[in-house]
Image 1 (cartoon, rainbow, N blue to C red):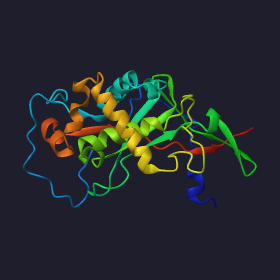
Image 2: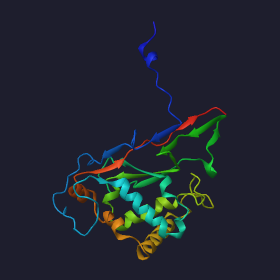
Image 3: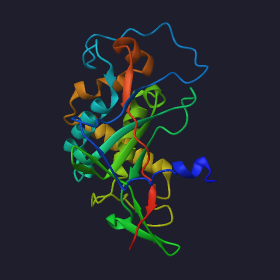
Image 4: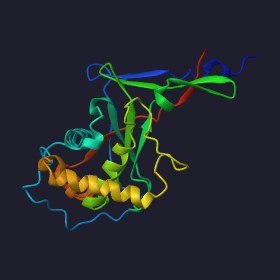
Length: 245
C-alpha cells in the first residue's frame, strides 16, 4: 500500500519567481508590534509639514524607501553605478522590541563577479532569479521592521548608505569587495560606518529632496498613528538550487 505522504510530494522550487501588478502583485503585509510590546500612547502627533503621503492610506514603506534611494543615487557619486529599478525592497518582521540588532541587509542575486551559477562539492548550483514587471532584480534589500523605523534619524540614514554601498561598483548582482581578509566591511567597521556617515551628511547638505526623507524623522508608532498601518513587501530570500550542467 502506498503511503499518503508519497502521493503529495513537495513540488520543486522554481528557478524564477515573477511578480506583476496585473496578475501577481508583490505580496504586502502590515508591520506588527513585536510580542509583549507596550504601545506608546503619547508623543504620537506628527508635525503637519512632514510629508509621508495621504494620511487616509496605509504607509507604503517600499515605495518611500525606493524613492529616497533613487534620490540618494542621483546625488552621490560613490553610488552612481546603482540602478534602483533593479533593486527589490522588502521587509521582515522583527521578533522583539529591542532597538539594537540587525537593521537591514542586502542580498546579492548573483555569485562572485556576477556569475549565475557556481560549483559546490561537484554539483552545479544557481540562485533563484526574481523578476518584477518583467525586469530582473539584481539585489534584494530587506529592512527589519519596526526596528529600523525606531532608530534615530542619523542611524537610519547611515543604515541606508551602509546597504547601498555594499552593492558592487560593476552592478552585476555581486557585492562590493575590499582588499584583505574583511572583504565586505573592510578591516574596521568603525571606519566603514564613519565613511557612511560622511556620505550621508554630504547628501543631506548637497541637494537632497527633503520631502523624500521626511518619513525617516518619524518612528513606527507615529507612522502607524498617522496612516493607520505600515505595510511592506514580503518575499522569501532566494534559495540555492541544484541545476543540470
